[in-house]
Length: 241
Image (tube, rainbow, N blue to C red; front, side, top):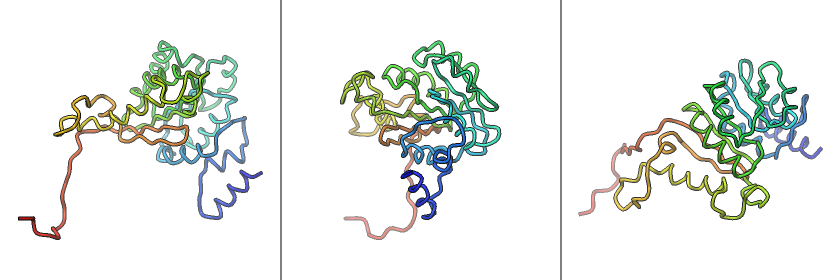
């Protein structure tokens, strides 16, 4: 009831998020989301609406979010649900495909890439262990098309022991994501006084931005080249002697 009231207040304030509207008036299957995820999704996925994207969601639960994506992205979108539970095959419907496999299995990811050679968005909402999140990122991030989006959620498991996490523990997805910040700045490797351990890599050349939220990291892809600086306008002061 409180969520419905908050959604109503937001609508009165002129704030419209079709994902919130769908979620809190869910006409379909069960889904479970932290409320702020809906805002993050809409912020980064809105530009794909009506463009017939191919969307892969790792972890189908009861299939409610698959139906939400189908509704949100519109006619022509292809929604692919991935889960290890064979019962999830029952969730397939028009515009929604289901693939059964283990997201920690690199061979399965190869099959997934072969079946879907073009992928616009990946949403990792799977088992949330460190191995699962890292393998999925390594196997699917390079496969996302050059102007696509990669999103991994429930990053708080990087701090939970039973998922393989702990604060600042090497090998968690949060710690791996922190290293991506360095890669994002890789083009500065040749700049004077920059630590020479910095290197431009494939991530440097493919990522436009990293966005961190509570329990979520979003990577916006775009082919990137070395940054260029420009000056425009008239100077306000004479050069110092």
